[in-house]
Every structure is written in structure tokens, then in C-alpha cells.
Amino acid sequence: MPHPRPLTILVVTVCFAPGEHADWFAASEKVNDLLHANGTPARRYHVRHRPLLGWLTRWFAYFLLDAARRFGAVTRAAGGRKSRLDLTGTAATAAQDAAQRWRAWNTHVAAITKPARPWEHYLAQHHADPTKVSLAEARRRFEQQPHVLAMLAHTLDPYELSVYQAGEATYAALYWRKALIGDALITTDGQLLLPASDSIADRFRFLNAACTYLRSLRSNARLCAIAIA
Image (cartoon, rainbow, N blue to C red; front, side, top):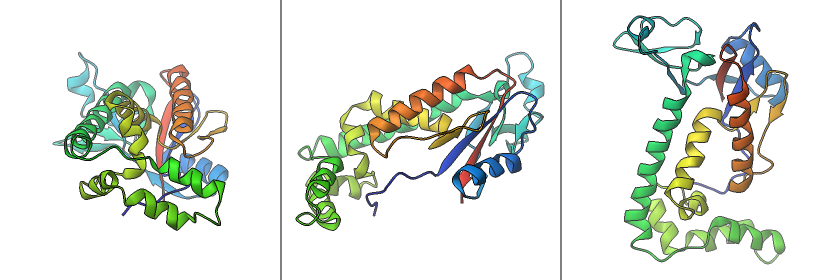
């Protein structure tokens, strides 16, 4: 059963400037230096195959980090040169998967049960008077709502309720950004970008800024996604 959670970092995207030595070990060192955590490569990115040369490049893993193959062809990687990563395809797949979850919620939960108050409402009650409303009591009040129970029954995360209620486009927008960025980003000059808090609004602010930064990188810059162990 999901629990209310503080700001968590599960995947970090590490950026390397063109010409800088870049592999998953170097990326892990940056993660360890800034977050004091260890990690392993996360194969999150689709690999790009150009229209004319794709029939040839699909068999080679050059300029890629920790590439995975399917029937011999390179399909996914934990990172590599930006020009070799299919960022558009990665985002599109994540958006499609998120849209399917939202439609399942809309059909099996929203259409059947009454709307519920999101977790943030009960968390605010706890922060306003912790002696009167403990964290456990706030959780109990939130999870006793039929709408939330229905989400748990369909293995949907009720602590994302506010994003579900914001609509399909908003929910999908959150997840295609997360597919590209993860939960944190380390820039080429070693800056750590993070959400200010675990709130959805702060996540969007962070992801929007990180996506803008990612678009600004040259095509021969390199990326590496690291999953925190």
C-alpha cells in the first residue's frame, strides 16, 4: 500500500558536456558527490534510428551507454550522445502509458465513486495542528474515502489524486517529462536541479526548467540516467 512520502529521488539524469569523458561510472561519481548515494544505469531512453541510416545504425551501440537489444537491434539505453537518443519517442511512450492509466481511473474510479479530497488537504490539517491531527490520523482520514479505496483496489496511486483530477492532459504531461528527466538533474557544470518540494506544482516547475535545459544542450552532449540504489 502506498504511503505519504517526502521528496524522493529514484532516478537522476546526469548531463555531460561535449568532449567530456562520459560513462555510467563517471555519472555515478557525480551522483555520489552531490547526493551521497550510489546508483546503477537505468535504461529509460529509446534509441534513435535515422530514416536512411537506421537500417545500419540499429545494429551498433556506438555513442550509447548500457544499450539493450531486441532481436539483435539496439532499442533502449541508459544514455549516450543526445543525437542518438530518441527523446521524442521516449516521451511519447510515457505519455501514452500515463493516458491509459488516467482512462482506467476515469472509468473505474471517477465514474463510480464520489470525488475525494486529495492527500494535500489532509496533510495541511496535520501541519496546521500536529497534536490534534497526527500523520497517521491524516492518512486514515484520506484513505477511508471510497474514491481512494477504489484507487487502491485498482492499483492506482491515490497520492497522485490531485494530478488525476487535473485531467488526462495534465497527468500525461507530468509523466512524459518524468520519462526524460527523472527526479533530479545534474547539469554539465555540476549543478543539481531538484523540485523545491514533493508537491505536484513544484515537480512541474522543476521538470519544466529541466526540460528547457535539456533542449538547450548540443546534439553531441551526453546524458546518463542513474537509478538510485
